[in-house]
Length: 75
Image (cartoon, rainbow, N blue to C red; front, side, top):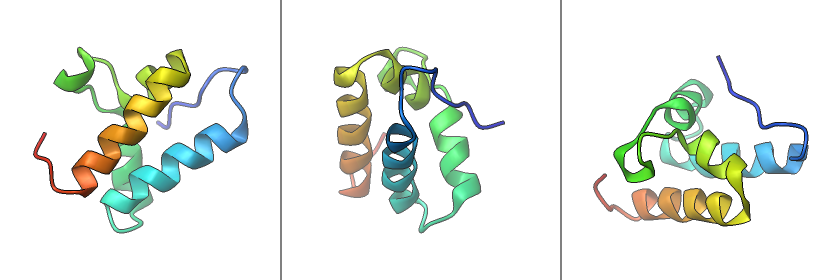
């Protein structure tokens, strides 16, 4: 199930995360949803969605993480 951000976030927030994540999976929405909801050790066991919901810094970290993966950094 897709985790949606709480009420303080706009639809732009969801859009930005999904567009960034989809670049990793060639536009595959199912794989993107899986990635955004999978716990990761770089995030202390949180999911990318959980980290991005916490703060602007959390969102920036997730977008940077996606950029690093896209650039070839192995996670």
